[in-house]
Image (tube, rainbow, N blue to C red; front, side, top):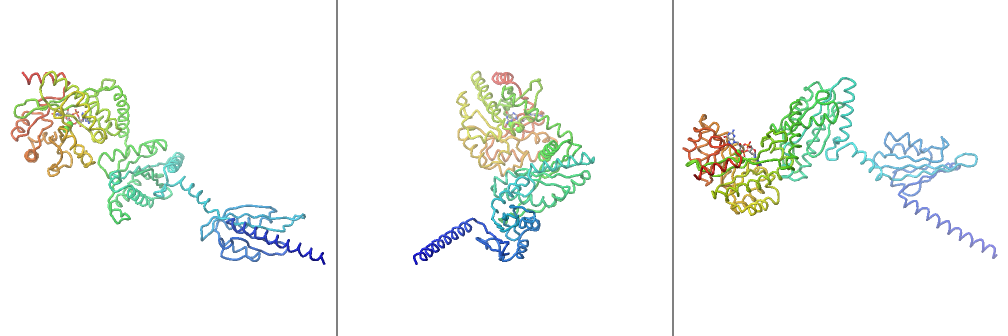
Length: 574
Ligand code: C2E
Ligand code: CA
Ligand code: CA
């Protein structure tokens, strides 16, 4: 009796242990993010365990049901999956593959394990299905990022360079051609600043989407960065294929782009084109040439296309050489100042001088400021150059003042980039204090383009400078967009009428009428007037007659070194 009892206790204990083990196994399976399939060869039975429903919407109860798996996966995974599920046919013990599900797009890792008996016959098969979507899509993303630009879905720069390299290689073999179109959205910075970078991104995206429609086997399209796109064309039929593409772009740009906000926006682009083998013999050079040519298109007015031509490259290289020399000149302060006198029209007495920078390069060749100042403005060197001009001019002026006690106005050209420096005003004040020059003896010349780009910021600074007592003068009036009504309320004291008016004022009736009304209006607004580029007695007499306050020009004095200005002061005082 006690034996039986003992056996019962043992059975019950074993049963409990079995239940515990089963529970433990089930928990392990269920929390493993996997589903399992167990096949018993001897009995021919199939059993599914754990998270089956997560993966499949069908049950597998016999071997025939295995076919259902093939309907679930994308076409190209069907046969690898068949091989993986039946590895016993190849005598394998285990294998693992990844398959992609057709509907759910889930990535599933399928691992098959077979157990063989001593005779080498399979006895048990366990297949594990595991969700590896997260891991695989990260891989997908990495692959995508290696080739494509996320924002536009176009090829990225690196991959484009590779594809273009292929085109060039093929062209070399087949005596073919490759054209590169370098495309830059006009005024993108303004749109980005004005509408915000989110809208900026949307613009880049919309235009990129449009470009992508132009792609085919022989046309690859990429987004380089920001607002720059590049198109590579294999074996173009001369300019004709490029022209045809440009025509499509041009026609699209005639219609506005619609933003997600509903707002409509018109775009224009500048395009540079360079061709292999004419412009360059390798990929990177080809892209560089197209870029340089694009800059030329941009500077000759926006919304244009420019084809490569050797002289453009030459000019560019010359500018690069000027830039290099300019850097050295800034370092060595290899500049000097000339001053052009300005006279009161009525009595031809000296009103003041305009400071004009002069630079001779190391070979003694004179480089004109209208050549190197724009370069210095582009690369930021205008800031140290401008500070030097200001300090040197005021230093010289202080010397004249000490020597002659003749009150004059020192007029300085100041670029927009200088105004935008946060310490610009402090710098001016410091220099004035250092040389003990009164603010009223200094006039800063600005051009209208400064005001167009950053009206608010600059006018605020101008107002502060005027409060200090410094004069502000609007240079080159008449060459920009300005209208007389726009002048009203500008924080300026003086207006300089551009040389282009003075040039034709005698010969052209219209210019005369315009010049007269400018002077009349400007005087009414309370500004002082200066006529620039006065070269003849006739021009002078006429300007005198119409009451222009001051005259500057070769007729009464060219820009000259400081000693000659001293002679002029002495003459005035005599
Ligand atoms: P701008 O400010 O309009 O200067 C007047 C230019 O006209 C000067 O050329 C001057 O020599 C020239 N000019 C004056 N009167 C006559 C005339 O009767 N006939 C002719 N044909 N030309 C005349 P410059 O010195 O070559 O300067 C060219 C431009 O370079 C200046 O135009 C100015 O925009 C810029 N610049 C010169 N110095 C500086 C500087 O220190 N800083 C900055 N930011 N720009 C400067
Ligand atoms: Ca000037
Ligand atoms: Ca001027």
